Length: 424
Ligand code: IMP
Image (cartoon, rainbow, N blue to C red; front, top):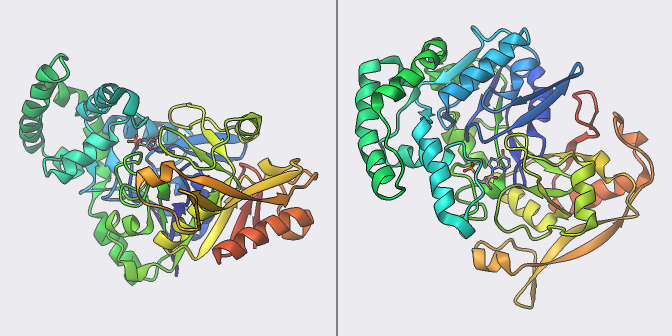
């Protein structure tokens, strides 16, 4: 039995989808625990490319129960579209897809507010995905949120929507100078989705507890990345949930004492999408080359991702806050053909060298990265499946990173397909 959390150890887009898909054939439950349709998990198998936003990435490999946990915020309309897409591909959801009763609902007004707030922030915009994530978590934390279980009782749902909409209309009219919304229109908009989603809504917390008691294997799938965590990330340029391992417990009901593995996923370089500090960002041709070679465009919004060298100071911080005890390296093949590969091994802040990731935004913005150059390799490693096939320089690169972090890489990804993987 294993209870493994799969976490993004950078700013998201590390390739968690591929790894969760790969590990799913040995899992009995695969659980998404936070975030919403801001995530875009790209999977490639049998010559198919699929992007999932809400359904756990385990749905295509094996027959694990796939659960959307209580920590996720769900856009019912987006989820129904995704369900239809998965069914069209010939995959069955009935009996193996489950939605937590206590996951919160993203309503159209959350998306509207997300976009209006970003516009108002102007030069200080977060660069959100515009999917309503922040406003939905605001509703949750301010205790006016609507939960999936509320969709099952239309009277309760209507009265909650009416209460919420009064405040939202006040803001739309007086602050944003936008047309107001009607509860009846919203109810009508939700009608079809409610019918589709109702059979999947259940007590997933109890389902997972029974799974634990029966020694079943559970895979907890994070979205975004540790440096976008609302507590531990580069606040305020973060998402509104906890992608870190603590969030896996609060977002699923699986207790911390049950976790057996915490797997951190890192690319062989760094990317970030949206605004906010990025100490090793490259604004030159090298950044452009990484973007092109790594196809670094957002899976949800299509935005070009900012690219830079691997930041070991930030990665060590991610290992510590998550308790990462195994690592996966993705996009290793993108590093083929460079004479030298730089890795950031310390920072200079106000003239002082440090290996500690700073927590204040002012300090983060002052970081001057200090790099160590490692030899590159000529060989094309894409698609390799054996450690012994890797060129010596690639092995040395991996060994160097492992030594710095004090954690071993158990999986190395050499391409986007399920099969293009080295398991150690
Ligand atoms: P939000 O999660 O849409 O509120 O966006 C907040 C920040 O998180 C923005 O910088 C987004 O670009 C970033 N973000 C959200 N989801 C993802 C993701 O799945 N990958 C990478 N960045 C993300």
